[in-house]
Image (tube, rainbow, N blue to C red; front, side):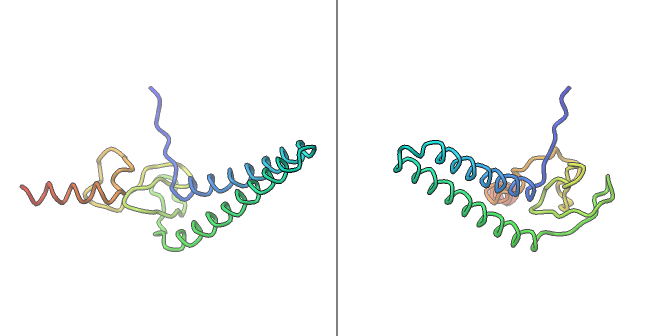
Length: 128
């Protein structure tokens, strides 16, 4: 049976920013290969620069978000990690984590972090 591997939200966003950097470099390299067609070369260079600038913005945003994350010690690997939202995964061992007492023992699901899910849960509890 395949075991699910979770990833921390901070690591997911950092990985996305890294992919944007490599995509930008790759786009500019393709532009170099097409230097016979100047307008295509310039187009690929502009797209590459936009991708790299966007990755810089994403890195800055996740840096600011990381300062607001709750630092905890993972109970499995005993390493310090940061947690965003109600549920997250350890950055080192991928262990699902929560600080919410209501979610302890429940199956790990990232929907617990969405505001829509919390509103629906409050609505169900108020109807009872």
